[in-house]
Length: 392
Image 1 (spheres, rainbow, N blue to C red):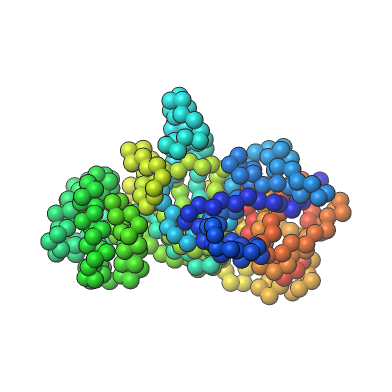
Image 2 (cartoon, rainbow, N blue to C red; image 1 turned 45 degrees about the vertical axis):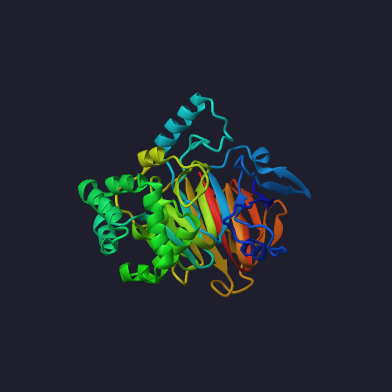
């Protein structure tokens, strides 16, 4: 039996969110008084979606007879998110058990682990999305740091970082960076903020964006060594439709943009910079992967009507489906490719879903729905695009 439900979702108003992007996407009024950072779709205990059945709403986790393996989000970043990494499953289990034994409450802001699951992430851009993710190679980092040796006021600091990089590679470099004193970090921030020549000492590739971000970071977090993160993390921008996979242990920060995010159903985060929230650098250094890593950017073929992003994780998957101007002719009726449980978010146009048991529903841009599917079939037509999250 196929069951299809319209969803009512919950929102997160983190301070890095955009006041306009999510309201505009959903067709809601935006008064600019608060940031809209995320819309959560799923049955996560922190913000569970509700199913609309016969004009009555029931929490998804109560209606579905299984816990979803994924959490699906609409994400709008107007300011950088914290630099962070997520544990693998073994690290999450060990860390959660340790903190449970300590007696710390689950809502304690100093907790790192609120559950025992890992949190691999998939991000796909709806509009251009700028990201920092993964360590550059030691050679690339060294070439980015060396020009600062010509600046007398901060030469001694960059000499410490370069020597640590040469002696102990990425782990040594990150440890030395995290151990910089407040005075040393403020000297770096002062130079970046106050000297137009700061841009001149940056390497030529991505010079303008690196300089812009370092100045913003120095203004907001002058005592944070992560102000120089554009020098050691890969910096790139996803175009609409492009997606990346962020594995466990990969240091990253979502800088600015609008997109969708799919992750395992977890909220385990180890923060390492660009935040006023709790940071546990010792724990972060334990779970980091110190191998250079540049996420592969996945671009769907322009002719694709249906595309499943080939990410290396079996328990969750993200697909794109479109019809009309980008695919089939308007009015064509085809089998819907979902095998539940699945959550779908329409990002453009108008979608018509029909099927057995009297299923006949229309969804428009910004609307989402949950499919609980057994052996029967659903069909679609219309002029639309959507993203679909599946879990095992």
